[in-house]
Image (cartoon, rainbow, N blue to C red; front, side):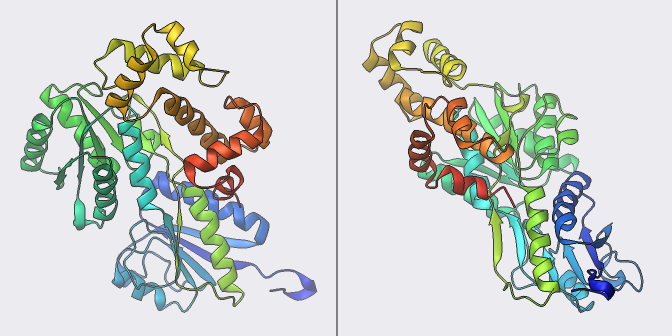
Length: 385
């Protein structure tokens, strides 16, 4: 909408989120990336407060739209009283509350987390968290379901570890897990509790228990020893997509009440999962050789020259341990790099293909689609404006 002289009116937008500083700043970065193109916007940013105080918004605030982390019906009712469009960005929103929602795809997140453990040969896997108390069981259920499809029974402890008694229960659970094990925790504070209890109980992380967090806060991750690996949620993309939806609503457009789910970018790997649950020293050598040489013209003959054994023996032992063939592992490592380059860079498709060990983009396109169900270009679009 234009003002005098054809200039666009400055829109007043509020960003209301919990005091997850790392998350809120990444969200804001995404919002502002859209506002810089679609603006001008005047953005107010603040943590959510008590419902009766207007969710933390300044007294008498008057604006054009709100982006908020809405997780209760009471919060939704409060924001609804402002009479402006609301786009919610809670990862676990309450069904039926105000406005459309942009969030992380929890099902995709569960799959990424499960892959991270099984790719390391781990078959004893647990999940720890608060469960239904904060609505996180949806991701935990999905994590368990993905593992069940692979023939792995997931051990669950759905509780908090805030008090002394809870901490003892967590430590006992960790001691009883068959080793080596992997433990997934959706919330950073739960992942930190797992690492702390392992340290207290003399359980070695990552070689006895590998720990993966369902989100990635770089500063928080490095406050642990070893540093926490975490699933990299698309927070900036959530911000920019939420801003685009809000922009449409503020000019009178219709976007519906549907939830827009965006896939995670992958896993930021750190010390807490830097392990291979493989007792076969020759298979360890094979994995290390593949990781070192996967992005060149690598063949099975190359692997067998580096780690001498019969081809059928290698394939049988590899399948028994990892549930896939050495050729599948080469492909997995290459596609992993392709995902990273597609989501984080603007490299041309041919450059990405060559960087991943493929001579042509056409061949990368074929392999990528077979592995992920979508073309590289479609995959990239999920992370771009």
